[in-house]
Amino acid sequence: MPTKIQDFISKIFAKKEVEDEGKALISIGSNQDEFSFGNYTPPNYEKLEAAFRNYSVFASLNLLAQSIYGSGFTLEGDNEKANKLCEPIQNLKSFKPRAVEGILNALALGDGYNEIVWNEEKNNIVLFKIVDTKTLAPKWDRKGEITKYIQTTVGGISRPLKLKPEEICFFRLFRIGDNIHGIALVETVYRLLEIRNDMWESVADIFRYMAMPPLHVIKEGAKSKKEIEKVKLLMKDFRRKNFIATSEKYKFELMEVKKNLPELSKYFDIINRAISTGLRVSEDLLSGKIATSTIGSAQALMEINADEMAFIRGKLACILEEQIFKPLCIANDFEEKDVPKVIWKADISEDPKLKSEILVNKLKVIEMLLTQELVTKKEVAEKVKSIIEKL
Image: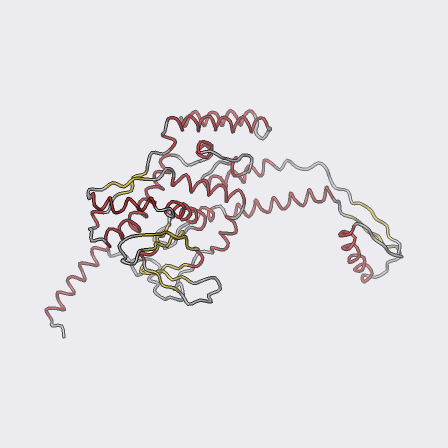
């Protein structure tokens, strides 16, 4: 049974531990219940994923995720043994593909997860696996520190699976306040994407009516609503087969469709410009006017400046250090100060040869748009001026 002196000493050390971790509590409180999110409502991942599946959003964010990872990184630290322990991780075949997918999910859904698979001795990492964001729920204490993850398969048929913090790498690039979950770029433009989809559906309806104008059918002698309903059913079959056989007498008239349509492209340009600002990619790529196939052309379509890219990569470096290299070092009896730092390799825009390629590709993009009459000469002048200012 502990003595009063032991209780006193325990309280002193407990207080010191709390002070080291900080005093502030997370605003939404703790969430340790395995079967609920407490007082917090998780993001609607299904809604965000549906928006991400749009062809131009998918292509844009894939390109952005690859550009953020770029040419990779090196590890630098004072402890050579710790450096040598961590360096082989990058050579794992599963590391880069899963890291890029984690970044992509963070951009599209706000949260991205990789499972970190350890060897039997729990002192080395052997594999990285992508985890469906929709199935994983982080659990946290009152300070906002994640204590475990609970995975439930879609439908909740199987028993929830507990995963330790060191078994998951949580990619979360943008946050507001002390929110546990990240903010998705798709979420910031979700309403604009809905508007653009509605516009495309309206355009499809216009072309549909132009190709196949509405048909006005008149049944001679019809005297009741019931007879008109029969005509509607008959015409559905006519639309499918393109012929009609009946003993009754009908009169057909094509309804006039106005050919003078409004200039819609300027409205799409306004929407695409706003969406491209939120997704941080070129408006030309988002609108589907151009595609990319080389590193240089990919960088030419990025709308993230060097400072913003450095900021995002700084966050990513912290994620990799804290969630991959730190647990690996601790598992091998190194101290926290021995954990190597992630140093990103020079961005390709800083390489003189590739910088020249980027410039050439930017000009090629402008030339192609002008040739296809997708931009005016005034817009070309503005694009060229923008390129010169960034050199």
